[in-house]
Length: 295
Image 1: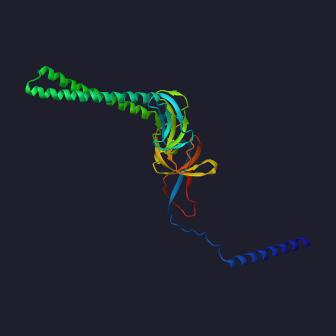
Image 2 (image 1 turned 180 degrees about the vertical axis):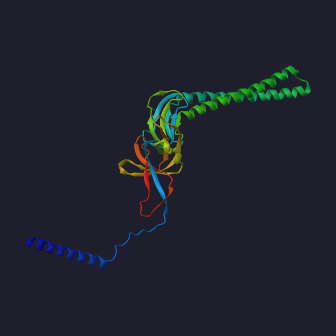
Image 3 (image 1 turned 30 degrees about the vertical axis):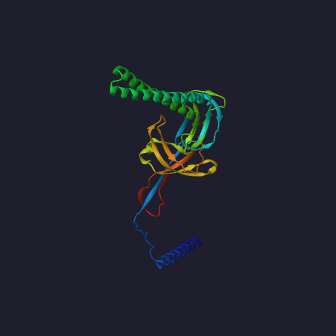
């Protein structure tokens, strides 16, 4: 008799619990449905950069060479010297040139005296020809001597001017503003015409020659901004000056980047940086982060 009573009791308890549960569910009401809202896409610009690396090199390099041969008597500048256009850099011995100038000056004086005499003779010959007091052949000789004297004077004056040019060439001047980056001029050395004496960075301007994968060339153009990781963690801002026309064996192209005038002209540094590509429009939900990328 006890087992049937226990079973009945358990059934009654389960029924009571079920009734309570159903009653509470009915009081709470139905579960809320999933809500969905629509948001219009936003138009914004995507920014992308290309990583690049390369050397700092001169914007343009100038070679200072001698126009004449001679013996170096003075070297007036050294490596790292900042020079201006027309500034004297080297002087050569002038002794032999000055001697030649004095010789030609004397020759010019003699030629002028000969011309004066020839002109006087030619003028008298013209007068005698008019009166018939001198044969035509002799008159012709005097007139010819006058022409020869004029030619001799012109020749001597030209030779004198040439020697003065040589004298000016004994002082070798800078051909532009810049900074000396190489020097081969040595005091006491004898040099020949055309010998290289110095190299200088024109205008003290250096540029970053960055290597960029060829696949980005169609998107890189003159004027794009460039961020360069300079020495001592100093950031440098530049602008694309030129995209190189050729590609090397590693499918890399050179992009020439102009640097600000206040950047020290230290060529030979290998730097890294990023070229900022033109922005492209992108439509996306405002809940997503703006697009960005680095090549």
